[in-house]
Image (cartoon, one colour):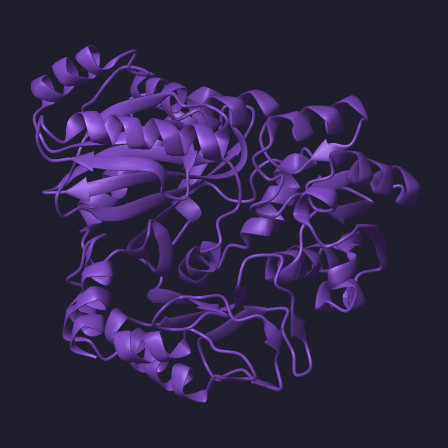
Length: 450
């Protein structure tokens, strides 16, 4: 087991990893920018190192400074959390060169899954179902037209190196295709420095289903069921739940077994998530995230398995703590991402939290580094914390969530709490009857009648 872990992140995820390390008896080091000097994870860590000014490029993305912090403190492993350097293959390689363990997959696996086209090829080779589309990047508009005609409109043009909804455009007809291609290439080049795009069949009303996996790097892997992340705004997840209200036990088992076998065959090490679009009983691979997900707590709630413990155990050479046949799913869990944003316009709302009170009671978990008097800096994402609720079934979970949202108080900044209080009372949400387009349509309709 490791002696000392450096946590190369901030906010609630840094605190989450810190707690897991302390439970395992491992010393902790956190890095922070000058803007985060008073952050909760900095206060609770055994050691802290300031690595630069507020801009991410000068601090949390500064590989040189993070490696230097490891050497200064004697950290023998780094947990990257999510975001920032968590899916940076070069970072993983540099740590390995310095004989520091990256708590995550190999640089090679990060590269494979970080390239959307190569990831799709790999998924197909491993037996994971994929969306019909181009085999790789489309070279010109003529080739794009041929492929789109073969698979049928509508199609979606996606950036090969994309993420977060950038470089994605829908073409509903042949007439729309040239503009979609040009726009997607332009956005991709500006956002990622790579204007390569590919084409896939556009599904009209899919769910977003993702499967949590953990591999030991030596040919063994498990799956921990699925999460439904269909409530999204601009391709960003807002509300996640496990298990999905759209799947039955047979579908759940089938896609889980496909994913765990694929990950075992790949020789993958650590936690990861394989994401799908799901429509009419069929799963279509979107991408694989080679890191811990923001929404991992709902999986922990229904399985009782600590995913960060598993990450640390596997990275230290201890292997998996459970076999597939030992994993039992219990009840239902929902996570709401509480952001410091206007609940209607979603404009960020940095500032000082004057009053912070979290809900409690059976089945309630809040992952947050916020507190009364904490100043939310304007330099990073707006996530204040995550409310995770667990119940014996989905009905009980929704009732408990409604009560927890009523108890949650954040004063001094605008938050998305009012949005969740509205959603928990919506009949479609109560029935689990929604797809990836539902929330944006709902918000547009609400704005039109306001």
